[in-house]
Length: 245
Image (cartoon, rainbow, N blue to C red; front, side):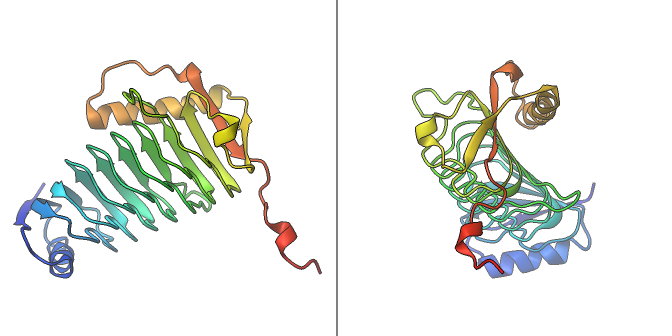
């Protein structure tokens, strides 16, 4: 694999992303060192390259991305994977709010915790089914207005933190949320209902647990039997807001 190292430092986000797109024509891998909050890294890149990030990337990492694999060796800020179509983002740490906003495909793996409104407006179409796997806990409004895709909350090492915040699944009308434990009724949006988990669900969860363990070299056992499944109670919760013809 041909790799190029780029020392980012104080380079502007615009210049950095222009350089990444240019180098993606010649290299299979780009390693970014000394990243200091530059936004939009990997935005709109469609080449199947790997981008390794040392330092903290800014908002909208991998926005509109269509193929690359991004690996972050620290925390990440808000809106990673914003409207991404295809590819993979792996964060060796935690990230901020709105991860996977309007995500349409690909996978995001976060080793630690996430902030508010993660998975908001996720959607799927035919074989494009986005996935977010969260190792720790999630803040309020997880899966808000979710229209498709998959969120798996593993709840590893959360200690005194709550597994999930309030208003989980508010406005949800598609997709599935799997949680290692249960979401109390007072934390669920009125549109979110619990369903019985079956072997097919367990197989899906097990598959993503294997990927999580591989990415983060996690060796401890995660009991699939303790997971709960949540989906929308209505696939068209806002039908009464529109005029009937």
